[in-house]
Length: 136
Picture 1 (cartoon, rainbow, N blue to C red):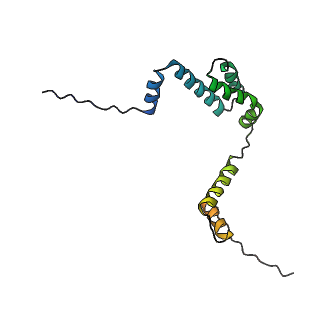
Picture 2: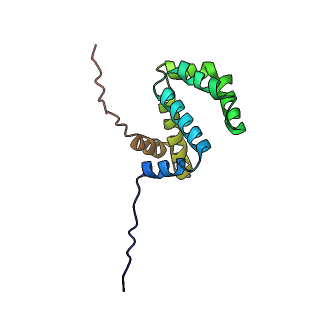
Picture 3: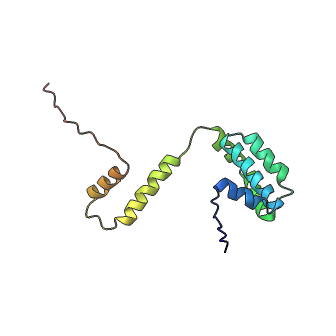
């Protein structure tokens, strides 16, 4: 008797994506379009990003059309976000963390405990200073 052993092949995420994209030309088109948009966004290249949207708008699925029209509508804001070094991401993340702590710790007895928990979560150390009063 011959025993046939089948070995399960483990695939890397790249290989899985390649196999899936081989199944559909349309899916491959959208994946490559997404990768190009992502590349230009990460490279902060507004002109190429918007040109890619303009060039592909007539050919894409209606779902993409809605997204692309939104991108075109907010073109100036997207350009500012890509070209300027300013962002409020850290502030928004800090606000979300504080809201999460507030939600989790409903019922702190006093504000000092709440503030301490926030400072611990944000890894902020408060240096204690001893005030020296001058004798004038």
